[in-house]
Length: 316
Image 1 (spheres, one colour):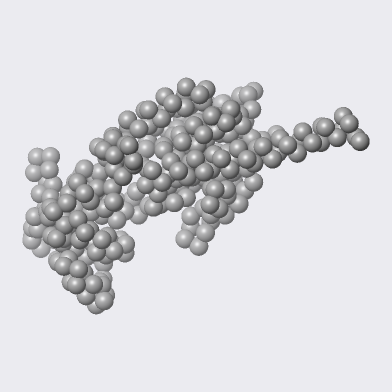
Image 2: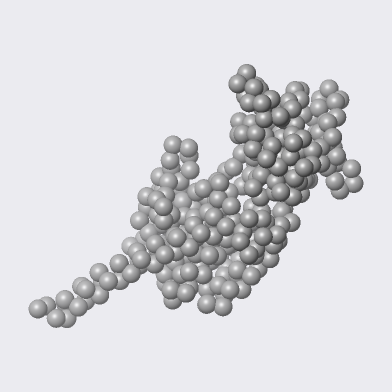
């Protein structure tokens, strides 16, 4: 990798150009800050055809939102770099941002918005249908499959709550415990909610043409379903943050304050990289809040420097 350092000192380097990163860049650019955004072009929600629950953007394809967002921030002079940040070093002259196979950028502050990745169960049909009729967020996709026969795969402890929640959208919910050992209380809660439990190991998702048809169990039983929900294991893409020494909380996620400030001075984080529950609209808001906090931090540094220069010039 080249070690050539870019001579320009950016006020803020944003890693990640999803809703959080782009909204942060927009707010910072409008505050007349020099901003660079580095992104790999692999958003978490790429498999989804539409996003929901974002006021004025309900039903908009995720890729379209990012396309519009990139154009908006570019119009304010933000530098958009297609690439990946390999690691970041904290130096006395600011942060050195090492791009994979590219130059080293310098920045006064860092905002990480690299999101997370979803680890899916290794079952035939799961990856092929992900984001289409294999879903995970009831608030994102429940309305689109309302009143349809829905299945929930018990591949994660959170799946039980998912099944209980989905009954708001459909009266025909089947829960497949699969590898989960349900407690008596959990079975009672599911039954009380009208959720049918079909025991047995799940073999595969059944697909006809380009549509989900149902769930097949290892014993050969087939349960027709037109949509299936799964609770993925969410893994934050937080290597840049942990590489800088940012503290984690008791759940293993990087700890931030309400503005996104981490335990490392000068480093903020926003979006799914620190909050697995953040939807697109939430992530955008987190980016905005972080940007305002970052700008205020820069102003405090600049005021302290200006006062020092003022007193040196006029020591009265």
